[in-house]
Image 1: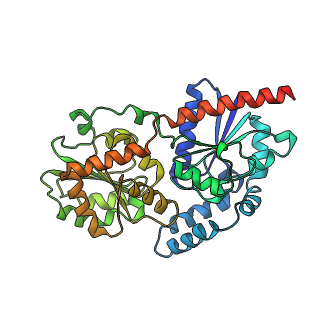
Image 2: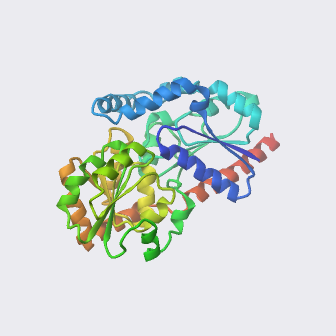
Image 3: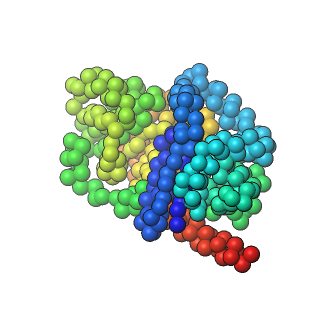
Length: 375
């Protein structure tokens, strides 16, 4: 059996979900699993330009434009959007079909070339879609998608409002890396790996390229820093890491980290996470019961993710920098508030999503083969 997982590098979450699913299928004994960035391979020059536009969409000028696109197209016909979208990457996908001859296609990004090609006998391969946010947009839908896997009943309801049959939607949760099901102990040894003090509360501020970190000085001064340590995670932005290392070199309780390979270990010692509302990060935080402060969500998926978590009591939204410090203080000092977060997470987080999705897809594939044989 061969499985082709199609994704896109427009945000880490889509790719991370694709890789998590690939690892899960391999664990279940499927030997041939391929993860492909369809649009990156189909349109390399345009892809690079689109990446730049994506980064600009986080700016003050870009955010209103993205908001107009996201909520404007949300009101368009899902059928009309699918008709346009189904041709993107089609030529490259046919090449991938010929190279890998997949039995199953899975998408973790809105792309419909695979579903569209099902109408051709030579490419009649079942296509499954894993939606990687706590919201859904009509761009995710196509009449020939075999099954959708979503984060919540709310997302399922949204898809049915777009005309998707409810029997074709599974509420499985969002797949996250296997390690988050079995996190490491909150031990002094784990603290030492990051040069942290296990006797202090740890606040992690992640998302260096997204405008969070410049406000750290104000946050630091507003906290009781004798009992709190702050970890700044700049990701792959090495320039920002160097800049912040210079600025905060005299601050005893501020640690600067770049890209963190063992993010699970860091999150296992985190008492409060300040970040942007990406669905994967939120799901990982939910799995570990980490209280989250979501800073100034961008329009579209981020805003909808933030609203969903806040509505469940599983996050607080800080639209202004000056509200971050009071939120941190409340979370670290108020046990009742922390219990509220935990209760909210219990209503959201679904353990074992990747395995549930893999099992369902493999079972459906057996039934589809039997139906073909009967015909």
